[in-house]
Length: 308
Image 1 (cartoon, rainbow, N blue to C red):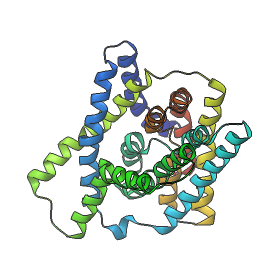
Image 2 (spheres, one colour):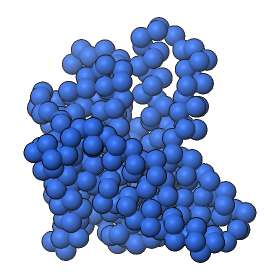
Image 3 (tube, one colour):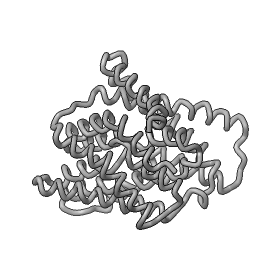
């Protein structure tokens, strides 16, 4: 575990550096927003496109992996939903808490870190996890909140969901990369160099942006945030492990990557959704802050436990 901890430490050190920059106002919230936008739309997209362009859909897609991860994530989503209802929360608040309990920072933290720790063979499984999170659960939270507020589902909501997926640069980059691979078109060297240079900015940029954005987060309602952090860092990887190791068993290496991805802290986009809909943004903020701080130890432990 010590070796794994030392390998993950540089990633969290960059997050810590970003946190310091944001906390001291050396990096303003506006600067953090623009850095996040650069990483999201350019650097991370370049990395995902280059990775997926060198893979084939047959190599990437694994129905059992998707089923196992989906089962484990949905189970934890259900647990958090039940706890929310038992506490008397309405549907929108419960949906935000369930999202905190089940959706990790796979894009900004998981992809670069797990690719370095497990090697490039981990990229395919991580991209599948990312696709399930974006397509299934990011859509689900919009459906739940919108349906609860309006009392019914409208076709316009489905249109918004579809357009949201089509405009998501991570989904677009993965699809375009796989399409490029399917056409068996070699990537010209200047283009490959361009993607490599731009994609190289994704890892430090994303980690720094995570830290800088955490500086503006608050730790209000600590008890609830602690429960959600525990659900995300412990319960989620446990049930995903049940899904990919016993219910829908897959290759041990892929299983290790998927469980490690499930052990990641709460995703930053949960706060964006909470703020957008005006539903428990402080709760989501605190869960992101606490889970990211605790994940310095828990992620290393999870990776060490599942590494083949």
